[in-house]
Each structure stands twice: as C-alpha cells, then as structure tokens.
Length: 440
Image (cartoon, rainbow, N blue to C red; front, top):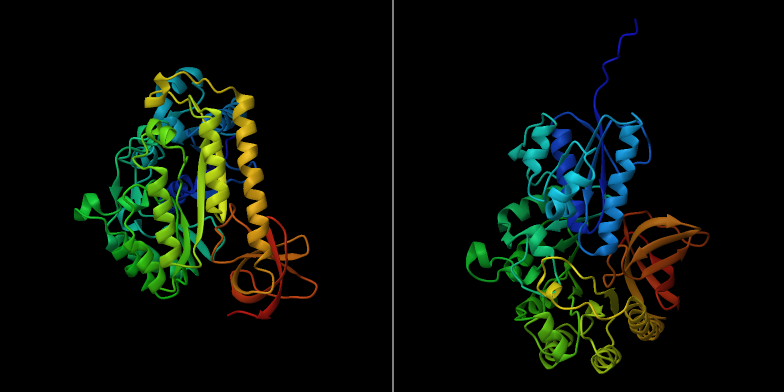
C-alpha cells in the first residue's frame, strides 16, 4: 500500500487589478511567510498546492478577468493539481453570495477587509507585529505605500465604496515606520496610493493632513522620490503644491483623475466641481510648481453624454495639454447611483470617443516629449529589455507613463540606480538618451 508523502503547503497568490490590490497581496504574503508558509506571487510554476486569487471588481473587463481566473483555477483544482482555492479582493467583497452559488469549487470567499479570516482558514495567525514589515513584489527600488483605505465620495458611476468601504486613514507614525522599513530594504521611490489622497487625515486628525504626512515621509533617510497618486480635484488642498515645491523628495507629479470637463456631465457624475474650478486648480498647480507633470484619467460614454458634451471634453484636453492622460469607457455598475439611469451610449460610440481623446493626447504627448530633446534629466532605471536600459524621470510612474531608453551597447547603468541622462530623441510616449553621470 502506497503511503502519501507529507509535503509542506506552498501558496501561490495571484493579484489582479490595481496597485492597491497589490499592496493587499503583499501584506497577505508577509503574514503567510510570518507563519512559515512558502509563498510565491503570480508564478506560472505548478508546484503550489494552494492558490489565492486576489480579485478586481472595478469595471466589466476587470470583473471578467477575475471570473475567468477563478474558473481557471477551479478547473485546475478539479483535475487534482491543487488542493485548495481561495478568493479574496473586490469582486469577492461585492459578489460573494453570487460567486458561492456560481463557482462552488472555491473553498472559501473573503472580502477586502477579511485578511484575518483568510489567515485563520489556513491555520495562520494574524501577526500585528508584522504591520509595516511588508514584503514587496515590485522591483527592489520602488514600492507602493497605501496611506488610507476606502472612500467617502459619492461619484455616481463608482462602485469602489461598495467594495472598499468608508475612508480610513492610517496614522502618520505607522506610515513613517513602514517607509523606514522599505528604505532599509533598498526602496528609493514611494508611490503614495489611496482611493482619495486629499481626504487623508480627516477621520484621524479632523483636518486634511496630507502635507504633514509628506513632510514626515520626505524626512525618511534613503527615500529620494515620493509620488502622489489618485487625488480628488474638488476642494483640493493647494498647500500640497507648496510642499511639492519645497521638498526635493516630493516628485513634481500629480495623478488627479478629473473624469470629465462638461459642467452638465460633471453634475450628473456628482463630482462636486465645475470646469472653471478645475481650470483654476490646474493653473495654481502650474504656477506653484512650474515643471509639474499632471496625469489625469477621463471617463467617456457616461449615460446621456451628448456630442456637444463630448466635444467640450475634447476642447478641454486640447487646451489644458496634460502631460499624461488615460481614458476609461463607462461601465454600468450595479448598486451605483448611475445604474438607475439608462446606459444609452452604445459600445461603438464609447470606443470611438475614447480613441478620439487618445488621438488628441498622442499629439500633445509627442510635442511635449520633443521639447525635452537636449534637456538633462535625472532617471531611475527599472530594468534592461531588448538591448535597452529602461528608466523613468520624476514625471513618470511605473507601468502607466513614459519611459527613457538608453542603448545598452553604448551605455551602462545599474538597475535600481539613478543616473543623469541627456535626452537625444523622442517619440510620442518614449524618450531616448545618453548617459552623462552614472549612479547619481
């Protein structure tokens, strides 16, 4: 009779969706390893016997990817190739009951704030002493720092509050400790992320304290770049620009999703801001931080969006000349305010409008990049790929923004180091350069 060999459990954590999900996965991995589990992240190797899928439920395409991933691993489990399958994250938070009925092969579903319960299912303890001791899955020289959870805004199209709950800020001292730990691990760049950065501190300190947090993080030895992602434009605390101008560690970069420019669409979206107020905010930003890079995301195809309203958005993009723009097509999400309104813009029109915005932005990006030829830039190098060292300026965030390419035959830099580069050529979305000073 064959005796079954006892083998230590190995967990493969699969992360879908945004950087906030990635941080959640990193915290999960940290806790599991703290409980002596062997853990891998997004691996294609098939030797893990437990799979945890951290899902995204933001829009239709993300939900579809999450469901397909769950179904894939349910099939893998049915074939006996893994022992256990667990699902966590936004999709699980939002559709747990439906998922349990539709995909019962999953051993258990957990919401976004149920990490202790997931650990308990694996006979692992939630170790409070590991808070701030996060293991990162990004390249060693940069990491995401989630400063708050949830959102109190009531944008009519957004399901995030349904999945992430109300806004909860993390204390400044806790964030500083985590930043110090990350710096000791070799992290040089922090991407501050939240569903709504500018709301930071209102719950804990009864006032907006992002500027105070920025000063505290800028004081952390070893952190050279701090980048701001996902700031809400309404009632924006403009003293953030003062900190940005004052502290060299704060990148002259702001990710501020504006969503639209037509006053009537903004009102229907419940964005609590007008185009005139938005223009004034951008004017103040560029006045206080003359070389600021502004990234925004826009939403096209919102219910009732007329050709005139869309043209208003096009004119706004052409006029404002943002350095970075991304476009989403409206997704009709259950239990949002907009779900009660007919989704009357057909898919082809949504796609055409998204394409039009990106055509406008491609021209602007090409002109702005061409103006950088001959300039000297500080660049942080992320990787070597296809005969090039690939890096970023302080105006570029990983994976979503422009990159700087150095010919590896003529230049040498160490991955994870800064270098001074002269820009010699440009395309719409990339810069090319030559090394001036290595390892600045």
